[in-house]
Structures are given as C-alpha cells and as structure tokens.
Length: 168
Image (cartoon, rainbow, N blue to C red; front, top):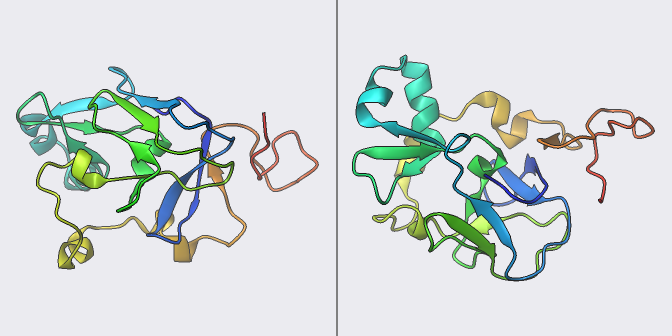
C-alpha cells in the first residue's frame, strides 16, 4: 500500500506511471505490504478466475517472495510503478519500500523490478505479449488527464475536486 499521496499519469518510461504528489525526503517509508489491500492469491485462485481477470492479475502482480505459488496483486497506484535501472525507491525488503533519494512533487516513482521478480533480467519481446488495457495506455489519454487515488480530481481548476493534484 502506498503510504504517500500519489497520482497516475502518462509516463516517459512506459505507458502509465505513478507520481509523487508531494516532496518525499530520502529514506521515507513510501510503501508497506498491507494484508487487506495488497491481495495475495494462489495459482489455484488465479486459475479459477475468468480469463480477463487472470490477465489483470498477471499484469498487476508480482511473486510473493515468502509464499511459494502465491502472487501479490497491487490494488492502489503502486501497480503503475515502472522499472528503472537507476530507481528512486528501494524494495529489497519484501514488506517495505523506501525513497532512495529526495523525490520531488510530480516526479515519477520507479523501482528495480529485479527486487520484486527474482528472475528479472530486463525487457525484451515479452513486453509485447502482455495484454495492455486500452483505457490505461498513455496514447489513449488526453495529455492533461491525471488519474488520482486522492482528491481533488475534476476538470474544473476552480473546483475543490480539481483535476491537478494539489500540495498538502
């Protein structure tokens, strides 16, 4: 579960990314495994789902490193965190994620997928095999669209639910 305020928007790295809404000092705990929000599923649970839900789980999950045959499905904006060879977060502790550097408001949060996927060795043609829901592809979003898990959020900048994230 993300412990900082975030929003999702088109990423220069890949598709959609998750961005910090506020300044986050280096060393801040930014994520913690939450038993109710980060859903743990067995391979049998996944196999019992309809195909479209299996695809969702495959896209937005990562292996549980302490429970063989289980994955963790992110249910918040953390599922949009993109890989970087020079990440600004540290997920070497399976249960916690920290800011490796000062993270500026509006900066994309990135992680090293090698910390989450033991056999990760980079991206190749397999990226083209992952079904990507069209609603979340950057090219289908209007350039000013920002999706948020925190209020405010609407099209009217004067509204208390403004589309643009506001500082705390």
